[in-house]
Length: 444
Length: 129
Image 1 (cartoon, rainbow over the protein chains, first blue to last red):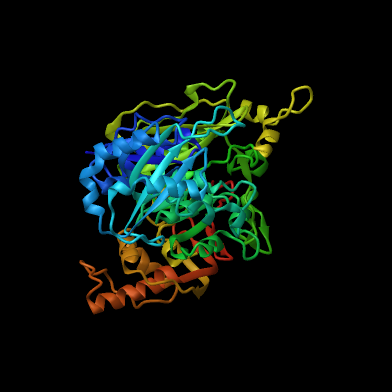
Image 2: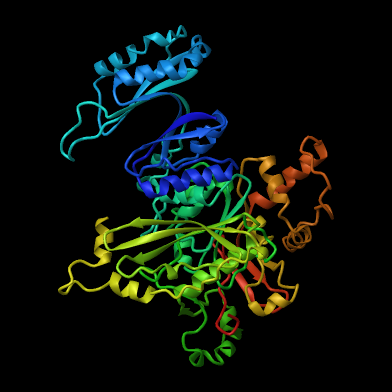
């Protein structure tokens, strides 16, 4: 086992460990992540080899890079002592290759003059290879962690130094977030899920090349794009055909063209998830979605709200043709309870996912009266991750389940939610109660 | 709607789940276009495992194509020139053929679903939902 240091993004710190865990699980190796500290962007892990290190971050969104650890110290002096003690046996191996040095700092910065001074102090490594700023064989990186005394003051010197050989940079460091930035995306809507957490969701859901991913509440297709980024053939459905259709040339398919992966877009279907057209024996490897919670879009399924009003209407004919068989017929929809929908989703996942296949979805919760009993559970599914993104008065949760099949006998919870309460609270008027959650969300 | 998708969709009426006639749907009056896609044999091979071949034949027949083999070769080897030709045909059929307008009829309940602007609509009237 060797030590590596991971440089993490300081975004969504509660999701970072889960992403690393999910990637280790995906590539089937063990890693102890207990050293993780949400306040620090650096995490030292022990791994078998560079291959594992690479797998741990190459798809990563919340990591930046991973480095073979050559030394660590609280001061520059300590760092050099540790490098000499820890890694002198490695120096010879790299003394002929082309290389460059990088200096990366967290909450601090150095002038170029200072960077060069920092780098030159590593002269004892005695590398004879040519320095190449573009595509060198190896990159050696000095990582600095500054701890500013207050939010407004800068720290003069780092509180911690790490030195290592770069093994792999993450998707984030290779510009994935810029690529999928919604501001540059051809087709988006008011409910389009942001790219960063959509990609993290697809990491947790184990989206891999050659697999089929399905989003039953596809909207403008944010998760399809994220799944396709990881190589999934993607299919989506939505009861709201307007979102799927898009406007003119701006639609989900156009987004796939924009990102150069049109072959990973299968189709989007206008369909009620609870009246599903995907044939029963089609294996769906991964299900990823952000179900409609009736906050912005009302939660609806097919069927009549007042069945008696629709009695006999199937016999209505227009121009000698059954009205419901006409091309422009629009079926009626009825409101549906969130808890029923979520349980339908779990049940669907348990029947359609292969053993080991994953379901990942988001649900919003109010913070004041959250009770763990609202997390739905299914006897065949293991709740693998339960992550919370906090906003001011509400939060949303990412739930990730793994299908273990009939033999699993897990806990069952049809989850009686306080979703109605959540909706009420979300839209509570400003009268004497300050801003509503809806307002806050806008600000956020 | 890609030809490929016709192999994955059935009638959405729950009453039809007890029959075997709800898949594949019967395709009528379809307008087709070919949309060029890069040929990726590995990608295609992966999809072949998921196909219900008899349903591919039925829908191809609905759309006027009766030139497909009655069964897929046992071991698909992209190195073999005959297989490669078949894969190219399948690529063109499954991934490049798009149904832009048309009807999909359930062979069991005879409900008709429409494809408009390349998007299939599987919503049901209340008496079938």
